Image (cartoon, rainbow, N blue to C red; front, side):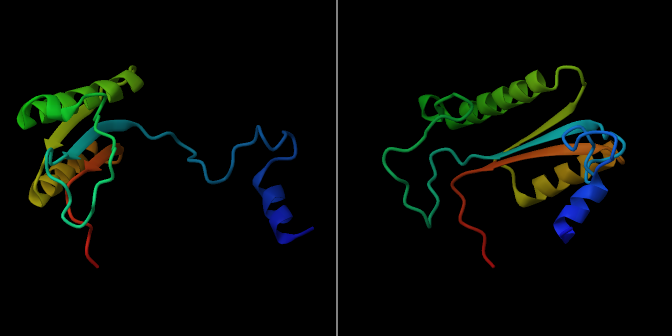
Amino acid sequence: QSQQQQLLHNNYTHSSPPYLATPTWRLKERMKTVGVCLILALNIGTDPPDLNKPTPCAKLQCWLDPTSMSRAKAKERIGERLEQQYAKWQQRSKLKYRRALDPTVDTVRELCYRMRETAKNERVLLHYNGHGVPRPTA
């Protein structure tokens, strides 16, 4: 047997077919997601300085055209809609949602620290969507 076949053989039990066996990379115990951080750096109306936007391009955020209303109102509505979408997917659990709309680096850091402290050893989902910012430097 090849080394790859041997590894596959060792990862599954003999009594069940491979598609029913639990792979070794899966967590033995389930983790609970207790919080969701929604970080939206949308910078509505600001194009990135180092990128030429193609024409035509996508405009909708959470099925909402942000240019159809004021920037502040658009950020709030997009944040609300995104939270509603996550709440719809996680109907059975009571998650703690925190939004950061066009945040500074310090705001994001503080939000992550607070959510991590609250979660203790459980899982936190972090959703980041950034537009209109320069590419990261090395």
